[in-house]
Length: 225
Image 1 (tube, rainbow, N blue to C red):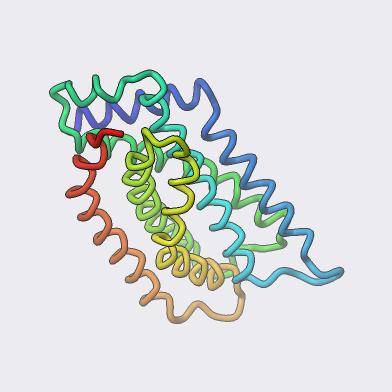
Image 2: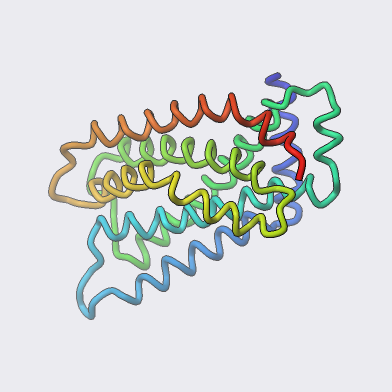
């Protein structure tokens, strides 16, 4: 299954990057959000570390929706979903492959958001760097688990983008609250205590929805309109 998972991820990345639609839209929307929120900065003042973390993850969440809408619409527009279901590839390989591709695209967009957060919101990493990267990777894992599951659910609907947007944000609240708090600690020069419980919540979220995705994805992806 690993070989098929990598093949699907490679195919999705190639198609997404050649079209440039999902990644470019995610990066542009995220940069626009960061810039617009920077205008709310008081004259001569600064945006708080917690607020900067919230803006970063809000941009990431909207980017997630755009990335997975693009990844799943690749098959839907060409009618290739039935072909994938008819192939000997396990359905779970589709979920893992699209999750892997989405993780890469989301992570690349966040590598653009981080310097933009520093430039427009006046933030710098004052806490430990390892905490920032562990938070980023752990939270991204939870985001793509939900994105890959709900991206499949929203396909075949007349307003699939709206469906994905409406469902995804309430489910992401626990992990978004955790990573906003942790990024606030990373950006704050005052203290970095109390991060253990928030990291625990992120990884508990990953495990819970990872297990749910393994069980639900075959039913969701093969469902008829």
